[in-house]
Image 1 (tube, rainbow, N blue to C red):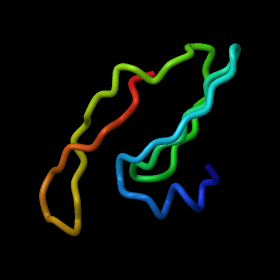
Image 2 (image 1 turned 90 degrees about the vertical axis):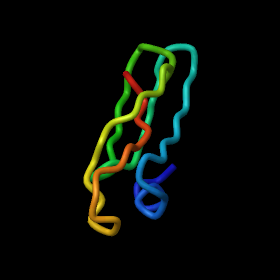
Image 3 (image 1 turned 60 degrees about the vertical axis):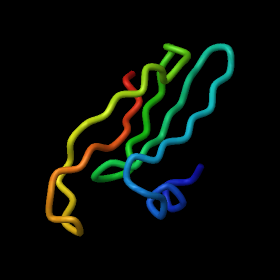
Image 4 (image 1 turned 120 degrees about the vertical axis):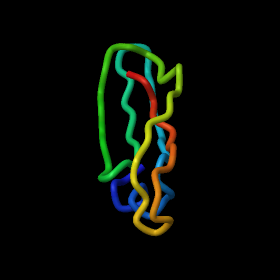
Length: 66
């Protein structure tokens, strides 16, 4: 998924693609993060705390644990 489309999604959104050799994951955090790895999965999916300016408090967002 292109970076511009990921930016429009909610914070914590992620998309991935995998073939038999390389795993590529892109997620929306403070900025769009792209990671390529030979570890072929995004599981487990963890959560991290980030400050939300719109809600004015810390919120938990999903993040692949790679």
